[in-house]
Image: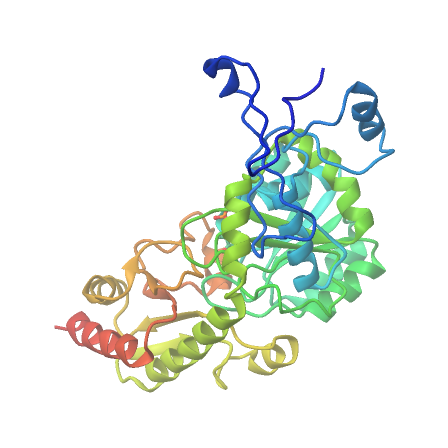
Length: 407
Ligand SMILES: *Cc1c(COP(=O)(O)O)cnc(C)c1O
């Protein structure tokens, strides 16, 4: 059946003899001339796309023509964002999903089968460890959990245990350990294992030069940048993305076009924000390092960071997360966080405003004692995610809160 009659905008519009209650469900189409493009792509907030009749639809479904059909599969607004992110990360293609966690779940479910083995790390994002240790385990996928610093262990496991994939992050959360990417990818390739890197903390402009097979990003953080939208991106070669797309579309973790639009808009200021956040974070780390009440500071940009040189080799900058331990510990850390005025107490990173996670909220409760020791999360560890505010205001706030932590 034909769609609603086409309308031209302007004085030549046709008036069709439809009752209003019918007409509102077949609203007039406004066609923008091909030589009159909008500078910002419109949001295709449409679930369905129609062709002229069934035979064209069939041609599309058989893969014999271009087009869009159903937004769970893809949508022009999503496609623009996919192509942007793939290019930023230096890979051929991208697959969008509704959250960062969905990228991890979808990738693991799509790439693994019963009997496969995964190498993962203690210092990974909590839900990542949950997926590997609990959900995948239920489906007969085994794993080894090492510390990201255990280079000899990584070599040994990859030599001895047939492994489907290696799943890692860098810098890690919350104490910013740096994964040796060259070491990981070299040994994984030799063993025939895929490398999957959650690159959320470092961003799209980092690590693309390494032989990582699949990059995952939470778009909720630095990509969208304003803390008002969730999303996730799986970025890889044409071949791997094409293979995963069918599986992932069948799981249904679709990103909404409006969310994709907001993320695409956020990306316009991605580099400006990230640069400013990194500069602020380094200044905060330097301030904390010199402060008498602080026991140790974790930030890869500090020369005293045990992997500063590795970070410098691998990254263009050092990220916007700073963690530290106060003298004293748990009580002081919590009092400090409560005394901050500019930093909101909440999870997440990568927003324009600064955030704090006090010791009583910082993860790791589910660690075994040995894992907790390897994680370097102390009883008094505080994590800061640094925003784009004026650095003098941030440092003044940190200074007054440190004073209050010790009264
Ligand atoms: C936040 C985060 C995620 C999860 O992203 P959501 O968008 O919140 O689902 C995954 N990995 C890392 C490293 C993160 O920081």
